[in-house]
Amino acid sequence: MVWKIFLFLLLAFVSVAGIAFPIVEKPSAWYEFPFIPGLEENAKIIFFHVPTAWVTVIAFLMSTVFSFRYLKNKNLDDDLKSYVAAQLGMVFCILATVTGAVWAKFAWGAFWSWDPRQTSIFALLLIYGAWFALRSSIESEEKRATLSSVYSIIAFVTVPFFIFVMPRIMTGLHPGSADDTNLGPVVNFKMNSNMLLIFFLSLIGFTILYFWMWQVGYKSLIYKEKIQKQLLRG
Amino acid sequence: MNSKAYNLFLKDFRSELRTRYAINALAMFIIVAISVILFSIGNEKINENLTAGLFWVVIFFTAMSGLSRAFVSEEERGTTLTLQLIASPTTVFSGKLIFNVILVFAMNAIIALLYGTLFEDFVIKNFLLFLATFVLGNIGLAVSSTIIAAIIAKAGAKGTLYPVLSFPILLPLILTCVQLTLFSFDGTSFDKSKFELAIVVSYDVIMITVSYLLFDFIWQE
Image (tube, rainbow over the protein chains, first blue to last red):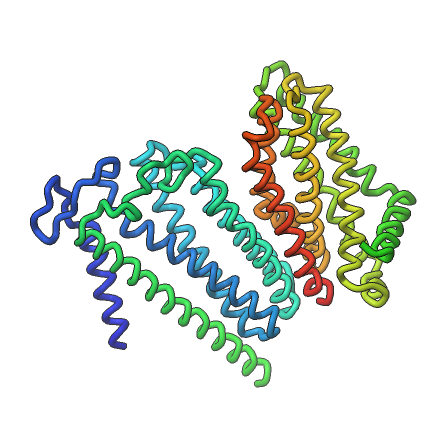
C-alpha cells in the first residue's frame, strides 16, 4: 500500500513539474529548466513521450519472453502473462505514437511525415494489431497460445531491422537518424541536472506503473477464469 | 536437402499441374492488378520512385493471393495427418518451401516482364543489381509467406488474415527492395548499395533460420 501512495506522489510530482516548471535562458532556481536550442518549449513533452516509448519496449519484450517460455514449457499461464503484457504494450504504444505526433507537429511542422522512427512504430502497431487479430480468430486455447507465440517470435526477429537498420539507411528527423549529428537531448546530456532528475523520475514512475498495471491485469484474468469455472460447476 | 522433400515438392507440383488452381489464379491476379494500375495512371507520367514502389506492391499482393495455398490445401483435403505420419516437419517445410520459391520466381518474372514492356520508367540501368535484388527478395518473400501460411492454415480464418499477418513481417524486406530497385534504375554501382544488399541477405538468413526452428511447433499443433 505504501508504494502505491509513493507511486501516486511520484507521478503527480512528475506531471506537475514537467508541465509547470518554466523554461528560461539561464536557469538559477532549482525549478527552472534550461533553454535547449532546437527544442525550446517543446522540450517538456520529453517527460511523457520517452517514458511511454520505453514502457512499450519493456512490455513487448516481456510479451515475447513469455511467448518463448510458453513454447518451452507449454504452460498456459505464460501465455496469459504474455497476453497481458502485449495489451499494455499496445496502450503505451498508442500513447507514444500520439505524444510523438503532437511533438512532431510543433517541432517538424506536421503530425506525420514517415520519418524512420514513425515508420517503425507504425510497423509495431501493425504487428500487434495482427497479433490480436490472430488470437481472436482461434477458439482452442492451446492452439491460440502456440500459434500466437510463434507469430510473436517471428515478428520479434524483424524488430532489429526497424530499430537499428531502417533509421540508418533513411534520412530522418528523429534523433538517431542517418543524418543526425547531435544525438538528441538525452544522449548528449544537454539537459541540466534538475531536468535529468525529473526525466529519470518519470522513467522510473512509468516503469513501476507498468508493472503494477501488468499485475492487476494478470490477476483479473485469473479471477475471471476461476469465476467462469465456478459458474460452469454450479 | 533430402529426396523426401523433393518428392513432397513433386507431389505438390503434379497436383498443381492437374488443377492449375494457383497458376491460373496468380496469372489472372497479375493481369488484373497491373491493368488497374494502368487505368488509374491513364496518360499521366509517373516517376521512377512510384514505378519501383508499384512494382513491389503488385508483387506483395500477388504473393498474398496465391502462396497460402501450400498449407491451406492440405488442411482442406484433410491430408495433414498423413503428412505428419510419413515425414518429419523439416522435410514438409522444405518441400513446401521449394514449391513456393519456384512459384514466386515464376510469378515475379512475369510481373517484371510486364512492367518492362508496359511502364515507360521501368528502365534498368544496372541489370546485375536488379537481378541480385530480385533473387534475394524473392527468397525472403517465399520464406516469410510460407511460414505465415503454415500459421494461417492452422488458424480458422484463412483468407483475410494472411496479408494482415504477413505485411509487418515483410515490411523491412519490401522497403529495402524498393530502395534497391530504385538504385538499379539509377545505375548505382554494387559498392554503393552494399549495405542495402547486406540487409536483404541478413533478412533471408534470419527468416530461414527462424522458420525452420519454429515450424515444428506449428506443425505439431
